[in-house]
Length: 284
Image (cartoon, rainbow, N blue to C red; front, side, top):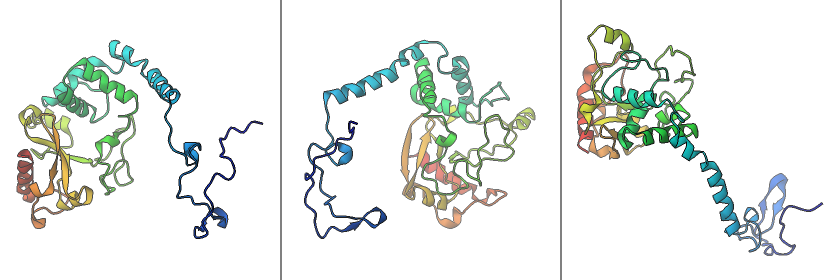
């Protein structure tokens, strides 16, 4: 049988170093000078150098071309990646302050229209932007709600789908609040039951068009220790004009007594602190 493993000839490894006695598996001592590179003609997986060739480059190009074959058709075909009429109009309505399932019927999960609205603010309300988002979603790059949570989060109460903060499954009506990984601008109190509040005529969502050059979304700023536990020296901030930037903690830091961990039920006593923090974020 032909040996498919490209094994270097015997004697091509450097001579053993008596001082190099590192225990291996099952107590076996490896006396080879493993910190030295393998022979020049050895495969990369056996310690040789990485070699490039036209055949290897051609193979990579063929794989990329094969994967890209359907892209042209998906961009040209109507509704190939998502329901285009809904997914263009509904995010625009949300950006104007309309409420899904109150002002219009929406059949998809929570947060989807908000993400699309931000996407369109960055890349424009065009079919190309919509279809690009749909293709990225079909490629499983946007398949998990985990993108709504900060990768640096260490607190299980604010991380994605933990026992302390479970994410509701598909087609399941949530029976408890889900803690977000990021925080929105504390412009006004938003009730849990938006439908009841809207029907009563006493509540309306703020229009995002009124916050074009203001901070609207950021890492959690509810308490100083939450900033320190996540990125330590600052936060990521999204602005209403679609831009985003890193803001150093020194630009909006407040004294610990005026910026403590929130209590339940929430108290308006520390609202002035939040107003100061977000006003400083606006000026960055």
